[in-house]
Length: 141
Image 1 (tube, one colour):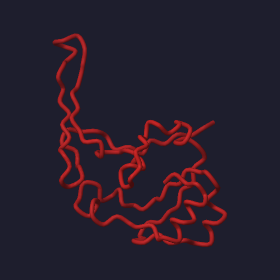
Image 2: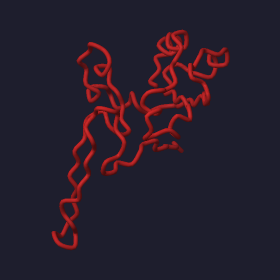
Image 3: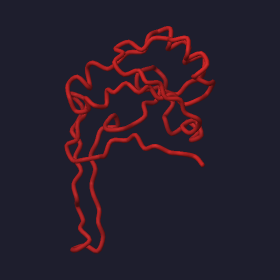
Image 4: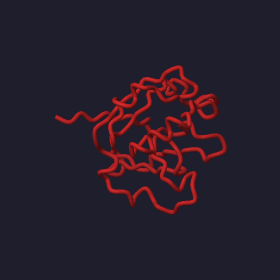
C-alpha cells in the first residue's frame, strides 16, 4: 500500500509570509447557520505557505508548474537527515541511497524555525557538487 505524508503547513489568517510579500488573509464570508453553507475568501501571494516553486521562479523560463505532468510529483521517496548542516554536501552514501528519478526530501529541521526571521534568511544551502549529482539523477527536491 502506498503511504502518503502531508508536509503542508495549514493556511491561517495572517500566517507567516516571506518578508516583503503580501500578508495572507483568510476570512469567513458565509456561515452555515445564516447562509445555509460555509465559505471563505482567501487572499494570498503565489509564493506563500506550502508550495512548489516552478522553474520560472528563479530562472528565465516561462513553463508554468501546471504544465508539468502530475506524475512528476508522485513516486518513490528518499529522505536524507541533514539536520545541523548549514551547507549540505555530497557524501559517498548518497551514490547508492539516492536512486535515479526518486523524489528527494532533505530533512533539515529548519521547519522548527517557521515564522521567524531566521527561517526566511538563513536556510541551509546545497553544495554545488551535491547539486550537480542531483541534476544527474533527475531529482525533484
